[in-house]
Image (tube, rainbow, N blue to C red):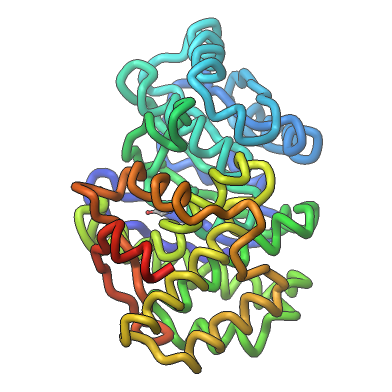
Length: 355
Ligand code: GLY
């Protein structure tokens, strides 16, 4: 097992990364909590790993209530949140009772939102089970539920007290989810670490077949980058925005497909290719580097072209409604070379021409 620290003073925490770690949860918990705890998971993950996690907690003296939500984005709602607050009350959770998220990004965001708000905040533990959640959403404290008018509109920055990444669970992840998670992995290479990008070029097949050492190395490097970025800018005042590379167009692509046609990572792959193209058009990025970037994404395979449901005007309208847009300008993360990006504001009219 490898351990990374997210250094955020009194809000700092460890990320443990390794194989077969679920059963060690009880002993790895960082502090003494109240014995009542709430385990939040979804119906798919529960069938596979619910018992093992519950047993580890029970063996360490916890009295566990388990809340199982429907799998999928629709669970990230205020209605589901209301049900979970009831579970916490019924289980007599107090301010030292931990909430444990066992699942992918939806479960992590939802459980984190409950942890941030129940009694103004209770301890929060992340056990991410998708590649995307392991390398991105479980680290850094972004928690939220959706509003009918927008994704992640109601939320907070609320750091977990431990992230436990068990790489063995990726064996049961549907292949499409694994490929979607690869988009976020490749993102780190482009925004921050050209050596990671080259490593991915050389080891993609081993990574996709979950070769133990390779997957451990890659997840560790991604979490390390995320930790460094979050330490510098916890609440996205500046540098943290680079983690949104590919997300400006990506979120619009997801929304235009009603969050059904494209998975988040798949939409981010398209968004990264579009951002690369914009960067080339603005003379900031080399065409050959763009091709190199697209080649790696395509090898996963991830589709990098705008999907049939894409409509430019609606897409730009959605980008203007995004949390990151302000005063008619849209924030874009544009690559300058593999391993380095810059943040640029682009107006809606310029974007019309560029797209
Ligand atoms: N997923 C981007 C961030 O955590 O800032």
